[in-house]
Length: 327
Ligand code: XMP
Image 1 (tube, rainbow, N blue to C red):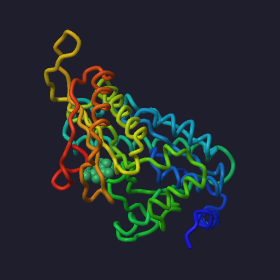
Image 2 (tube, helix red, strand yellow; image 1 turned 120 degrees about the vertical axis):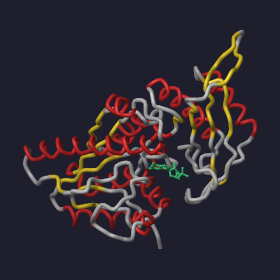
Image 3 (cartoon, helix red, strand yellow; image 1 turned 45 degrees about the horizontal axis):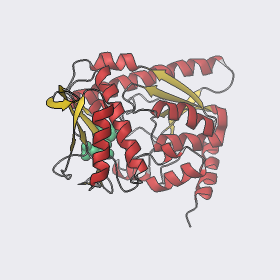
Image 4 (cartoon, helix red, strand yellow; image 1 turned 45 degrees about the vertical axis):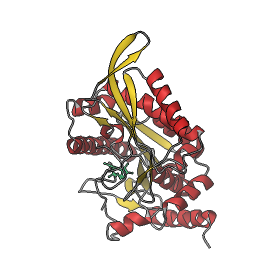
């Protein structure tokens, strides 16, 4: 019968056998899969692993700190953070078409990861021992089935993975989660002592907040959305609803403004959309009937605390016909 301790022992042995004394690289996204995959590999081969985390500026509040501090503290993993916030803002300037945003974000992400990779390969070559010849991927069983079961090569839909791999992949893949489902991955992450904020994290799109600003992306808009999103997440957690909700995109309608009144003055601000959904697999979804009191609290907090937002609206569309994300 299934037991996370057994799976960990089994995978650790398998990783050791595959990697030997080789060096391994892994990109962390902040999500569950890459975090658990890297932790397993680290348990198996320790400092032969180095992880790369790209801060593209489209992350939610506190995500970078959770990876850099909590996750590193829990695992002892060697982590290199690449801060490319400026570069992404510049590349995305004036772009509002959703697919164009995705393409730019994906392209910049791969470029950044490849550069970090090249530097680490160079550094590893200058020290003794084996070169970096392995790349960790947090591929799960459903991904394997979906992509036709191919193994050992990169075969990942760009939609699902902003770190979509370059064609001329010179690494051998290490995929310790290939036989597992999401809830099993969470159980293993918990068993390995990873922070709950990461292990229990709800799905979050690779392009991040970039596809939750309807309109073009600016620093100011990102800051505003990050604040609103943090309020929503804190209130949903406080209400004990994290497990009932599949995810709750918080969307800034940056090109829409509406009139409001606050204090003695008229405001002309932006609406924030709440999109809480219930789902099994994100293929279909229903809007979650959140308690009115909770909605009122979230609305009050956002309009009081987030400068530039004077209206909060609730998305009551199922999927289909609406997608979960607005872009
Ligand atoms: P939609 O909006 O298509 O979303 O109903 C279904 C699920 O996929 C996530 N999503 C993405 N994930 N890159 C990702 O890694 C993307 O470009 C992307 N677009 C949507 C979405 O959050 C939901 O869980």
